[in-house]
Amino acid sequence: MSIEEYRKACRLGRRSYRASLSRGESPFLPVLEQILQHTPIASQQQLGLVEIPLEQIVGTYYAGRQPTFTHDFLPLMGEKTEFAQKWSALCDAHLSSGIRDPIKAYEFMNRFYVVEGHKRVSVLRHFGAVSVHGTVTRILPVPDDSEESRIYTRFLHFYALTGVNYLWFSRESGFDDLLAYVHPTDAGATWDEQERRDFRGFYTAFRRAFEERATDKLTLTVGDALLVYAQIYDYADSLEKTTATLRGELASLWDEVCNRDMDASIHLVLKPTDRRPLFPVLSSSHLRIAFIHVGKAQTSSWVYAHELGRHDLEAAFDGQVETICLDGADTDEAAQQALTAAVCDRSDLIFTTSPRLLQPSVQAALANPKIAVLNCSLNTAHPSIRTYYARMYEGKFLMGAIAGSLTPDDRIGYIADYPIYGITANINAFALGARLVNPRAQVYLEWSKTIRSDYRDRLSRAGISYISDQDMIASGASLPHYVGLYHADGDNLSNLALSLCRWGQLYERIVRSYLNGSWNSDRVGTHAINYWWGMDSGVIDLICSRSLPEGTQRLMQLLKQGVSAGAFHPFSGRIRSQSGEIHDYQSRAITPQELITMDWLADNVIGSLPPFDELLPEAQALTRTQGIRKP
Image (cartoon, rainbow, N blue to C red):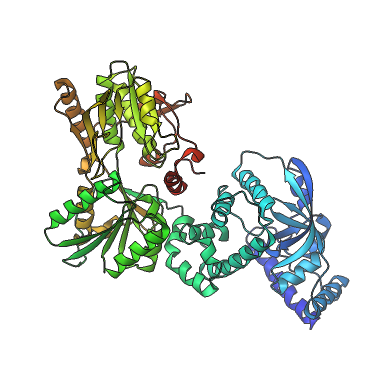
């Protein structure tokens, strides 16, 4: 029987040989000796006895063994040769008791090259084995700036913690992301033997489910696909799932995987779609819409603003739209309960009004594909849901111009909350607005969501009296109102301007598009859809106090008209950052993606982004998913 297996392997080998030649490729094993002739080597490490994934054994160390195998370790020698007899003997050993002797190999860039044991590898691969034990020496190249080198550097750190060598990522962040997925509270923890076994079982089942669906067109690795899964499903809960369960979950999120594979990212819709489709989609004349909030309107200004928007939405449709409010979704369990309640209420649309609800929102959308789920967040590449936000930097720019024209000593305070996507653009837009009317203006930045709670006192002690604070007050807030731009004179506050987000206008336009069928015209392949609307859509507005000087009010009218019409952009010209880098938006316009992911501060901002460990727990939770600089 063993000689028949050898004949079968040889036939496959000759076929593989001819196919390689027809593609203009070498049909033989790569030779590490030759590769290293052109590679600077830093050092070698003895790894000892290692379980080597057979698919990662890609070549031989010595050129002398090259002609006996194809590039995929299929034999090429005739069946009457000594080589064939030894291969057949190993075949018998494998079928009777298993191949037990370890091979000897070198590891280079997480690929393995055989020194001794070529025929063992060939036999095991012929019978579909997964791995083989081997004594391994790691060859470490001198690091460089290439992406491949950076990925391998992160792999070395990952391997030191986990001992896992059988998965790979196409981006250098992949290994760190996986560590955080398995150990959310301590990504730097060393895995013990039980954790390695648990992960191996989960990975094997996931891989099996993935490979059943994957085609040759996909370029992402199994590890890349696993990270897409990890953004939605909890690791601890997934350990007990069967392959059938994973198969079903993977099928439901396949658009998410394809989005990641094509790097399709996000389709930003910067204006409402006013056109109606040629063939409108018939929709219900009566919509049930659920709003789910983290916190309550009585204690959260953010929730209060969205609740005003919900009531405006109901008023705009005069009985055609019925809404419910599910608040207090402060934990994962509470969020799941709220989403379940919304589904049971037969909601047609669900708006989740915090980025902290992103993961449960995606889970609910995947489980209920007929319900439209929208989450209030930015830079979120999930095609299973839609996201929305407001271009708040436009209003901040105008408020900065007001502050710059009023400050008597060129100093202005700015209180930000969370260091998440979009916030840095808000800060910089305010600073640029102040500089527009006052070239000497400086903005002193404080953060309200850190362990240092005396942020207003620090501004007061510094003698800074013109301050930009939170954008809205909670419904139960008491005086004084630290909201918008105000002048603080001792205990007296004078509110001067407020950048207002009219969430009701945004909700109304989205719901109208859903009703008239233009909702579908926003779709572009598997791109994630993000509505990011501003002054030109009526979503952002500026409310000014009548006590402002007449000249300042006129200037605000002109600037507001220019921003609304697109004739003037807050980020134009040459802008210098705190580090001295010049961002040139004179010869080209700044892109929306640059605004969303902006991670630098203008040079007239005094302050910095807060370290992660100084953030309050609620801010840390938000920063993990939406942070400009994630931990």
